[in-house]
Amino acid sequence: MAREDKAAAVAEIADQFRNSSGAVLTEYRGLTVKQLKELRTALGENASYAVVKNTLTKIAAKDAGVEGFDDMLVGPSAIAFITGDAVETAKGLRDFAKANPQLQIKGGILDGNPLTAAEITKLAALESREVLLAKLAGAMKISLSGAASLFNAPLSQTARVLGALQAKAQQDPSVLAGGAGTPAAAPLEAPVEAVGEAGVEAGAEAEAPAAPAAEAEAEESTEG
Image (tube, rainbow, N blue to C red; front, side, top):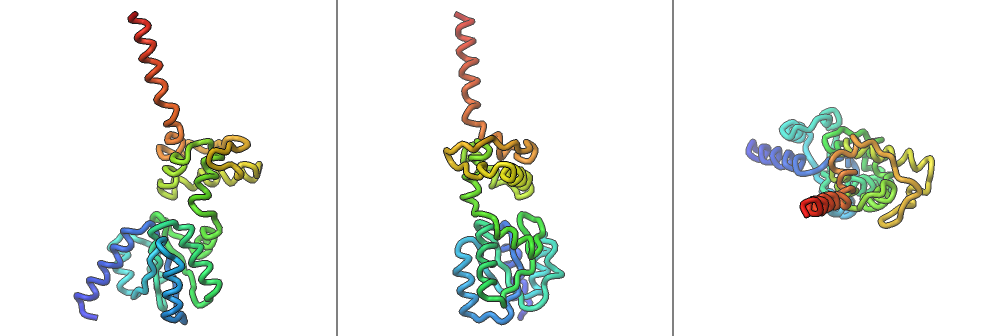
């Protein structure tokens, strides 16, 4: 490969790292072209799947500020760059690997955090973003928009809230029966610092506008 072509390939991979929320590194040794096409179709809009050269990927990962890939870049490598729901991407890779054992999941990154192959398997066992949004909104008694704001925050900010939801569910399984418009058995006492500006505060927006209106009426009655 000419130097110019290598530089272009490195730049393309680096851009894919930057423009995705995460990436899963796999080994595809033994898979046919047809099977690779089927995998790309299975991932749909949630991820793009690209066969990469290890040496160029190491350079691209360094350029993009991605760490943790170097030791795993051995053998025929391909990367699923996550552009949609990370859980659905993990499910797609897991299900395809079950039917096609030649596909091996080595590890990856999500929101800048390294993931082992075992952690990606656990991610695949979660429910989809839409289902979790409804359950989170019901359990915390916040709006769906508030729950969505929380899920749009970095993974590190949502992990503790989801952990609190799971702990609450172990005590009272009916918590996870709550959905949009369905109150759960009891509100989830999630750590405020874990939610931050994206979560509980977003859910409280509906009540906030009432205070200024009440103050304005009080001032008018005093002046009168």
